[in-house]
Length: 252
Image (cartoon, rainbow, N blue to C red; front, side, top):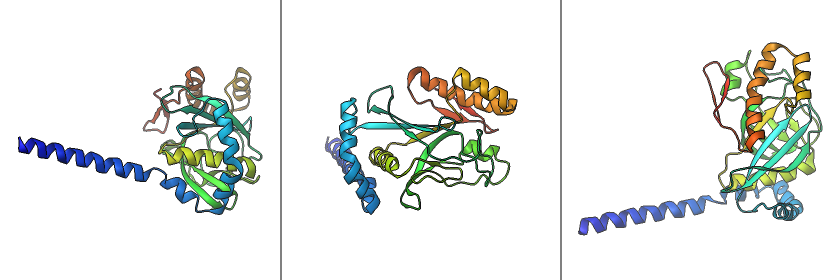
């Protein structure tokens, strides 16, 4: 009997320690970011307005999750959100991409000037970026590394200002909004997904792609379209894997 009580006490103590550690862990990312003047300034000028916008369309400031889509042809970054526990995402905001380089098609080698296309996560936040504020896209991923024709390069950012070689610039004012929206979600331990497409896969755009690009390129886009279509159908972020050749497989 005593042994049973001792085991229960040990289990309760262990659970309490885990709970305390989790509580302490929450807020550490945001706290670290707020050490930087640009982040503090963004919160001071943007956050109250964003909280009102979020609340007005039914999002909880304290629990929302975020998903980003980038459309190169339309020059848009779409911000989708859902409250924790909800199944479906809803469109919250769209930011305009103010400059671009390269053409439609994925990035395959360092120095090609291309903006990547594929399924990624935000890997790093830079509060002292040369481009005001920036968030690093997880390029190259497994697919990019397998399909690269040389060194794939890296350092692909969503950032401020309006210059780019292979990145996604949205100017300083909108990057402040997007940056702190993502800081809040990251502070709650969310993995921030960002999917990057050549265009919205409308009938008109598909016709344009077929007429102007190779069959191999359109075959690659067909795989991306499967992910795009899955999200369009149910507004749930599609899951994916990468096969031995670097092809995406949408698993939904």
